[in-house]
Length: 193
Image: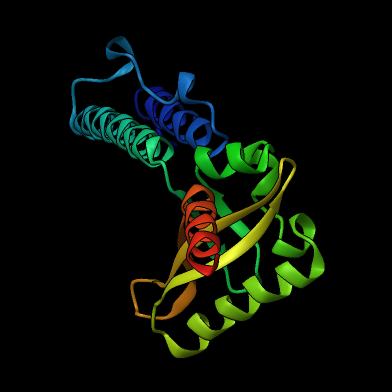
């Protein structure tokens, strides 16, 4: 039989690892007074250092994600990421503001859930072209319906690739050009007179 000198630290190690697996970080670290002054203690101490380092890296990653999301949300362009099934995976705040819907509502929805069928079909057709060809489709000038009425956008769509180069969706950038279209229409009317 193993002596209590070994079983107690091993059981504490198992308990701490179970806490990690169960998502309870408060019990993941082993306090110094529970660490024996032997080889097993070295393992436990190294484990604590590794966990602390992982926690720091996790925090750095969280901050980077927040910073990137802040930058994306600050863009005046509507930015969106869609999967191959026509669902919005991620949208920026500008997109949500223009649609007057929360980002959380839009994410997971398809164009057909948000836009009139004829518009949704046109958007999805463009997406499928990008998905099939693997090439961007740029300078798409198209109307889109919002709660405030019809708007115009200039949209660029690019394929979104995974690490192996497989197309797993599209990323879109759309700029509201309604004012520009209205000015062009006024100019055209003046020239026609």
